[in-house]
Image 1 (cartoon, rainbow, N blue to C red):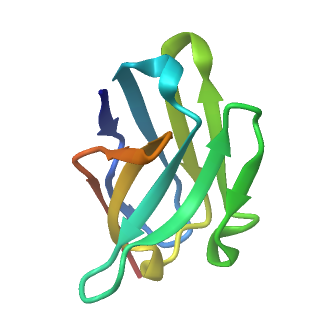
Image 2: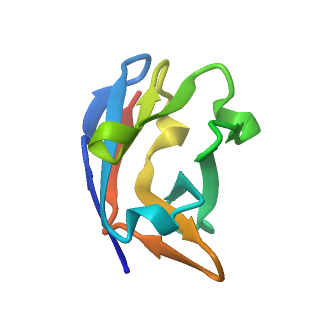
Length: 115
């Protein structure tokens, strides 16, 4: 079992920045990759960014050049630095951890970007 606790969401004006954090606990050694999804009202959940244990990263086209995902292995924490935020980035952001045959989810954190 893996437990994920997110923090760092909030309200920001367009063009601003926020940093999300996701602290993992439990069976840390089973994690193959971690990432962030988001879900806006009335839309499907979409992958925003991911990072593997080998530090390979992947980003949605809509956030490339603006968001950066990183890991702090000593703290078992993954971060999502979000810059140049746009109103369309408004969503609930969920941290996820992939293990073999499964993935775990955090409770979600709201990000609201006003124009």
